[in-house]
Amino acid sequence: MVQGYCTKEAVEWGLNYIDPTNPISVPKSRHEGRLAGQGTIGKKSMNPDPDLFQKAHFLILQHSIEASEYMEEHKNILYEQNLERDASWLANM
Image (cartoon, rainbow, N blue to C red; front, side, top):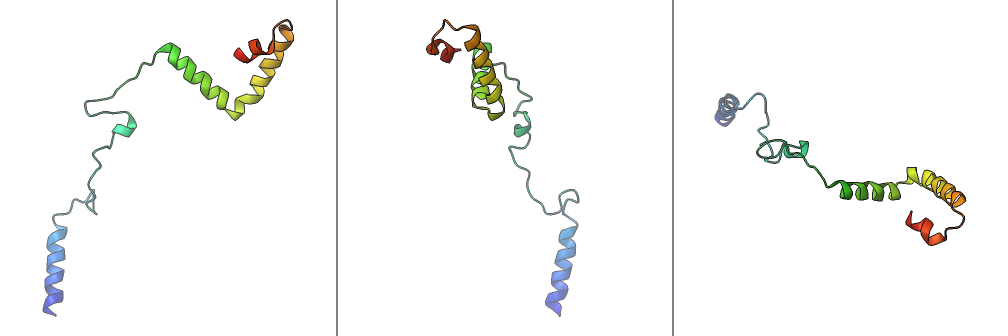
């Protein structure tokens, strides 16, 4: 009975020191905010090289399933408009 009373008193005493906004006392990650674009000093911006940006954009479009039918349609139009060109020219387009 005495042990139960001591446990109850210890728990009540400890509850006075728990932060009510963080009741389970889980520490915040030191990486919090960085995933939202904020670094340790502040918000960081990235200005990629325009040529590299265009290459990356083109690569993503090449691998996109949604864009594949439009790419095929575009290749067919190019082929019809440039019948004198060979297949290697069309592949480089």
